Length: 359
Image 1 (cartoon, helix red, strand yellow):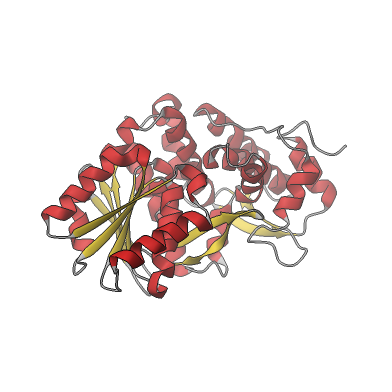
Image 2 (cartoon, one colour):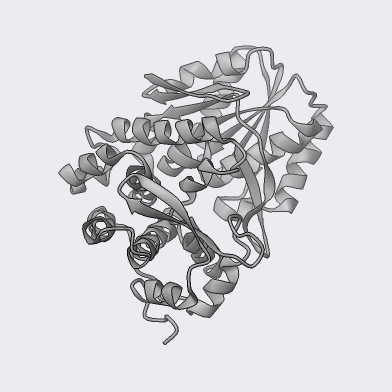
């Protein structure tokens, strides 16, 4: 097992490796009651987590929530708070999330809002959860206006990345999680890209001999960024590479698209924006499509016309007033913000990933 420390005003460790769950009790020291938020599809895995907690004398409150983005609603969060209230949870108690990125987002916000903040430990069971949602303290639910628009910054007390949990993850979900790993490679750590390109077929499975290294490197990238900028006042925005269009696609598809699939398309779009802005070289821009397609991620989208996606992007978290802002690359591992690009430039970049661009 390895540990990556996330710095900041409330530092915490991300424990990565087989059997990492052994570190959970130390992260819950002093908590008498623990609410374990999980989906029904992960009842078996969550049962093991709860059993281990009970064996160490904790009172456990199971909270079962809907799968995926269907669980990230005000109604579901409200049911969780009602349960915490009925059980008499105090600031000495804690929340544990078990599942993918959606459960992490929801459970983190439940913990952030209950009594204005109680301890939370994340036990992600997907690659996406391990390298993205569980690290960094972002918590949120969705609204009719868009994804992750209501939430809070609430760093966890720790994160447990047990790589054994990935063995039963469907291939499509694992590959979707690779989008966030590849993103970390493009914005900060090119070694990630080299490892994946060295064996694209193996990279698409958790059995790859370098799978744990990919997770560690992606987590280290995010840890460095959020340790300097928890509340996204500047540097942290680079982690949204590919997400502006990606989130708009997710919203347009009513969250039927996997997050990583949408971000993969968004990265190809962002690379094209960088190229058309005159900063990103052709080889690096083209490398996006080759590596993403190489592991089985989508690089095109034709579901919704540009005008509708453009309207959704206007309420993206990075937007300032009427100004759209995108993370682009000047070169490999050199991200920056591109503000208010020309509408024609946006349309031309979108035409690279979709036949439904405005003519």
